[in-house]
Each structure stands twice: as C-alpha cells, then as structure tokens.
Amino acid sequence: MNQNIKKEFEKNGFVRVKNLLDYKLDLEPILNDMSFIMNRLVHRFVKQKNKKRVLGYNFKKKYSYLVKLGIPELDQYFNIRLPQKNISVNSDFFASQSIFNLIKNKKIINTISKILGNEISSNPCQNSRIKQPEKRVSKKNLNDGLVGRTPWHQDAGVMNKKGQKGTSLVTCWIPFTKTRIKNGSMLAVKNSHKFGLVNHHLGSKGQVEIKGKETIEQLKTVALEANVGDIILLNKYLIHCSLPNKSNDFRVSMDLRYNKSGQPSGREPLPCFAVKSKNKKNIKVNNYKQWIALWEKAKNKCIPRKWSYKYPLPTFKNSLKDLKNII
Ligand SMILES: O=C(O)CCC(=O)C(=O)O
Ligand SMILES: [Fe+2]
Image 1 (tube, rainbow, N blue to C red):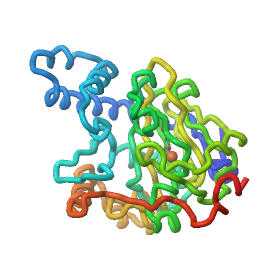
Image 2: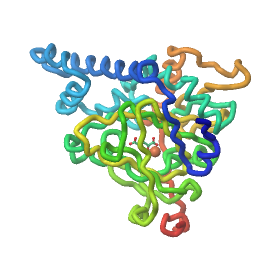
Image 3: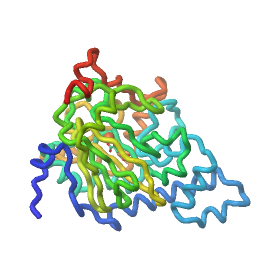
Image 4: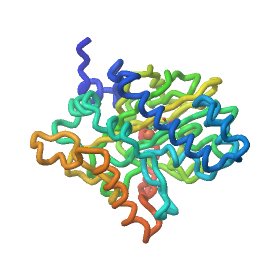
C-alpha cells in the first residue's frame, strides 16, 4: 500500500503506520531489558527468602509483585527520561542499548522524515508506560498517565514556552501489546490539531489537562487502536487521551518524540540530538554510551535546581482559547 503519510498527517493530525516494526528485532529487546530492571529491583527490594521464587516469575507476575511492594516511584525505573522533580545524583532512568536503538531506528526516522524533512532530532520528551489492568491500579494512580488513564491533553502543552511556540514536534507512539479501546487505546478529537494550543488546567497529580473536558463529549472522537509493529504519529496540537485498561492483561507502550533540528527541545537542558541529517557531521551521537553521557551531563546540570524540566500551564489569560469557545 502506498500510504501518503504527510498528507494523512496534515489532514487528520495523526497517522497510523501499520507493520513498520518487527517484534523480535525492534521491540522484544526492550521488554527483555525491562525484565532485567525488574530483576535488579527484586534483588534490591524483595526479602531474601522470597527472592529466588520471585526471580522465576514471568514479566507480568513479577511487575505486579513489585507494584504490591509499594516501591516509591516504581515507574521511574522503567521510564526513559529523568524524573521531573526531586532530581539527585541517584536519580535513575531506563537508558538501555535497546532504547537507544529504538530512538535511532531507521524505519521510524525515515517515516518521521516524511513529515519533518531531512534534518531531525530526537526530542527528550519521551515516556514508557506499563499499564496493568485498571482493577489492579491504586486509586491515587487511576489518572496518572504513566500507569493509568491519560487525561485529555495536547502534547505541545508539556513543553516550555520556547518549545510551545517554536518547535515542530511529532510524537511517535509505539505499542508493545495489541492496543484496543478495551485495554486503553488512545482516543483523539477529530480535527482538533487545527485548534492551535487550547487552555489547559491542572488535573490529577498535577498533570495538565484540557480545561472544560465536558465539551469533548459533544465532539467526534476516533480511537487510535494499534497492533504490535504499528506506530502512531501525532501532531502536537491533536487533543487526545488514553482510555482505562479494562482488560485482564497488561498494556505497554512507549512514546518517543522528534523535532526539526535546531528548534528548542522544550525541555532544556535534556538531550536533543540529531538522528538524521544530509550532512553526516551533524550526527554526533553515534553510540549508546554517548547518549547516556548526554543524560548524565544534563542530570548534573539539573541537580542544583532539583528539577529536570518545567513548563508553564498552557493557558492564555482570556477564555478565547477555552475549548468551548473554539468549537
Ligand atoms: O499512552 C498513553 O497513555 C498516552 C500517550 C500520549 O499521550 C502520547 O504519546 O502523547
Ligand atoms: Fe500525549
């Protein structure tokens, strides 16, 4: 099929590219590295007498066991960026060779370049999300986008002012499990990428959320369902959320982002580095160790101020940009 990615992206604000990635080659290495992290956590947090038994558990059983232990900020051990706050020399993040390979994946980058052109950088606004069935998620985490439902938002809203204004950002959402409405697919408001930045307010756990989300009930939405191997690209203004995982199984995804090189990342000083360029000399990060070094350097810059990134509440002074006044 000859899909016109740019045209579809411009028309709809999102595009699903089917069967781009290979599970064994591109995705499974990351799940294996997550299992490796889990084993580290078992050694660190599980009582000696239970360790051997728990190490033998499969991915899901082991993760659920770790959740039940109440390890503080568990999701951060699996997240592919520094924590937002309370940053210290010990702040951990999930930086494996497999993640670096995914960020640099040629099939992804060549697809992104159909939208952004030939000069592309990896943007540090990126997440991994391991979502258990909602019935196992604690009440306080139900609306935490990393482990539960993700509130209605625009991705432009989670960048600083420079990024909000000056960056062509494309989100690349990657499922590691087949994702349907039932297990928490994303849902997008049709044509909302044409609204520009709309007013948000602070929702659960301080996450930004579209102001007046009741208005969305009157609008047409589309479920962004995907199979393993597919990717979904999102425009930075597309209004979207993710649904609760009402299935009995896990729902795992990652969202990487890319921007045109030379534009602000929106999360300075976190690493933003060229992954495609006509001039090979612009590609300065060529291996995993260099990439980790960039994150460690950024971390050291952030330690004195104790936070890694901040963004203003994406809200204009007047109500013209309230969703109800736009539609
Ligand atoms: O996967 C999710 O829950 C939300 C993802 C999202 O909002 C994004 O990738 O921009
Ligand atoms: Fe998003």
